[in-house]
Image 1 (cartoon, rainbow, N blue to C red):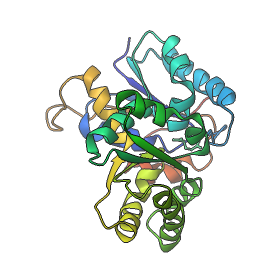
Image 2 (image 1 turned 120 degrees about the vertical axis):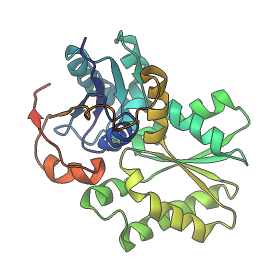
Image 3 (image 1 turned 60 degrees about the horizontal axis):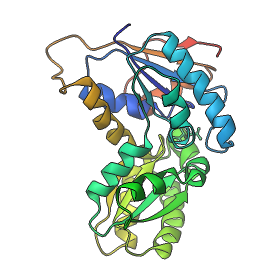
Length: 268
Ligand code: DGL
């Protein structure tokens, strides 16, 4: 078994999880797989998402990774039980860590989850939150336009703000007591500041924003041990595989915060 952590996503967005992992565990070796040939998962049926996610995981398991992180919220929401059933190593999804972090953050017990259509339709976040706290109230909102905005590098522009205002005002109309918002999609951390600004505009009380990428890495730390200080050992290698190489090198730094050293094209 190699020491690598396997991380997969429908495309480039899961690099937000890798970024978080590399900040907190800089010496860990990571093998990232972006299923860029079949992205997006967010608009596909649960059955298709599960089928795609299983092939991604199989690829990483063949590389003998020690841990699988399902960075894609849509895949986590629709395929986690099937993925866990087929792996002998721990498989961490985004939904349960995000739900837990939201419950830790909320004071009112009113939580909103933003995600893809596939994540919202699955009901996975509501289930994960209410399983832990049956009294919690959860509203969800699909924000499909956030994905292209993040990829275009427009996550901090007026267009992003206008879009966020539209999505969030509907959400606060549905539940005016929401005090915690979960960014339940790989791409949404790139719109975090805009979401925070719009919340300030729309709500008199402060709203906390929970990032499922950060929450996942906190859960991974249970398997990885104590966080590391960057100085002691050289940085761990990041190997990146994709099923289609188009735009990956251009987009990756936006999500990862660094350029990719290598990119391998693979066929699943
Ligand atoms: N990675 C997906 C997620 O986190 C977003 C992009 C897609 O729709 O595939 O849900």
